[in-house]
Amino acid sequence: QQKVQQSPESLSVPEGGMASLNCTSSDRNFQYFWWYRQHSGEGPKALMSIFSDGDKKEGRFTAHLNKASLHVSLHIRDSQPSDSALYFCAASASSGQKLVFGQGTILKVYL
Amino acid sequence: AQTIHQWPVAEIKAVGSPLSLGCTIKGKSSPNLYWYWQATGGTLQQLFYSITVGQVESVVQLNLSASRPKDDQFILSTEKLLLSHSGFYLCAWSLDWGGPGQLYFGEGSKLTVL
Image 1 (cartoon, each protein chain N blue to C red):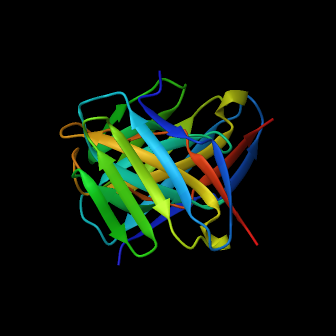
Image 2 (image 1 turned 90 degrees about the vertical axis):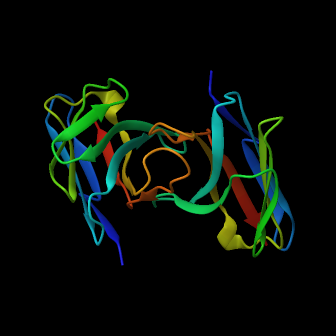
């Protein structure tokens, strides 16, 4: 079973709209969470990290973490066509080398 | 500034043929290095990691091998390609071992096995 589950599989929002992506972990050892974004044909790039319960805002992006429910979300305000990409949630434990990725959410921002 | 370069950008190979993909990291001393595999539009599967020169650990068995001949170089190879090897191969580096460390990915190598 995938240890990091993302939903929805794909999402379409209008330009200027709000996109909300979700991620749930099944492993309580995971302490650190990341959101990565991958444009077609490129390598993934880290968007933001969140390690503590609550919200973290960086520009148009807000991440929310609830460790009790092992749930992470990413909200993109004022979505732009350039935000169209594959978004990955990733989690790691406090020790060990492995960053575990979810299966990804495809975001399409249409004009 | 740190740079990560992968080569080749793309390869089309026949089943049973050998393969070598490479990755070079400049501007960082003794990084942790990783190879990931990605099916088209799929998740990222870690294949190998290396903490230091000459030492490589395998995460999954996919008839692939990896080597780290220099501090800044990571090589992925196989002597006989399978159809299932097709996909996008990504090299990455990090400074932190475990914990909250960020991964920095290269631009990837697209492999098509026919």
